[in-house]
Length: 380
Image (cartoon, rainbow, N blue to C red; front, top):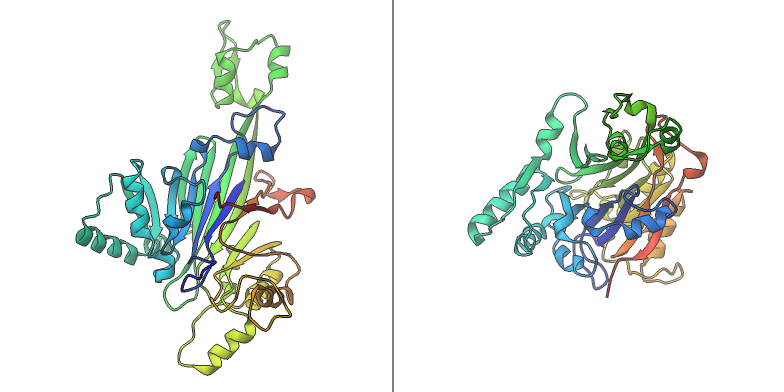
């Protein structure tokens, strides 16, 4: 499962209701040490906080203040991904890193970002005497994309049974902007205890070694092979989070086997067209809700969350109001999209459970549309 928490959903500038862009994605392993009779929903709520690694996509100014209203800990942050260098996506990064240092973080942190972000951090480190007591493992997007073959991925090993792959797709914007595909793979081994007992092999430390993937030998000299006593299941959940982008079709390849797309919808199509016509020499190079929704409808992705809304749109939903509001965005998208649609607000949380069987690369027909809005993350 992946749990998304929107920390900022405004484009360009903050509003009274929305901060600028940031999205937290928690990587939840529901196969942790929980009783067998607990449901998956109860499992993710009871999971030890120390085993809830998360990834931050973009870090607009004020992101660390938004985090104070949630239960997310900077100590469990596994990686930060910056889509592009515009300030509403990265101005909060230096402050967040400084706060992580002052909170006592010592574990290394992965930062996946354009090379210019490294230059920014170097300048701030020099001019403000910023000291980070943890290693910042910087991964330059340009270098990842320049590698030959299908290697545009960064692998993060969360545990022996929990893997996170982050792939990168180049988008179309006024500066180089990118999308991140977040793929969580959980390796779940189930021990066939009935078979062991039937063969006269009682519970012992050998059982644990088998479940960890080791072949073992009993005191009597009998060799027990993992493949004979352990069922090996793999499940995968994938979301794609796009930065600023005026050409949704850039994501065609990235959306294969994707459970959810998160994409900007800065304007309605009518407003975007007017802006482009008014000043043809300057194109904001953003998407309208309709433009994104039309592409996603044709791509076959069943779940779409729109975010990054222009400050001109108020947070209420009333199609009859003359004041631009979320209904305008919603109707613009719904005019062409029949899938599940949400308009993100600050602190909204969504649970994504792709339930993909990696072995067969297929979803059970009853496991589709596994995206649920689960309420607000704001804890005060």
